[in-house]
Length: 177
Image 1 (cartoon, one colour):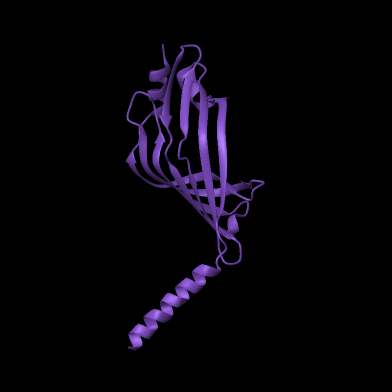
Image 2 (cartoon, rainbow, N blue to C red):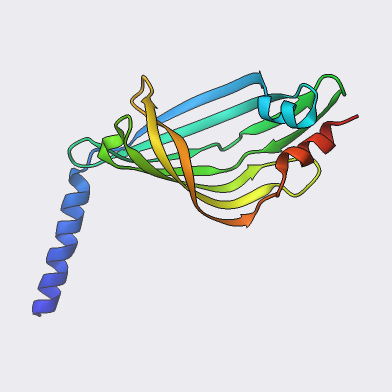
């Protein structure tokens, strides 16, 4: 009987504390942007451009005091196209990865974060896409007008899955004449 009372008390406490947290904020962004890829252009020796197109959703979670504690970013219909005008070649792949970021210090600029990326993470047009799980140490570098922390990856923590050894070379092979 005492165990049942203790169990019910714990369940009530869990529901009470969960109910007092601030609800998450959800932001939806639509992209259709084209820009030069300096990294891939340098690797290939000719101009390569990237077009990102689709919708991204950022869901930001808060603790009971309203402090940012984590964020989940998804791209439900995101497509990335690499193209080389000089060769007329291109390839497109879905970017179905998710990013889970756990913040310290309320996501303040300069504070550390832990970022975990899972899913389809990069295509080459000629080999199997990068897919799996990557974990990074990160740092908050700015806050968007919506209040979303922006991170920069600092160091690798772990990886599992399939990752091309030289993704730039595989992309260049697909885009070359």
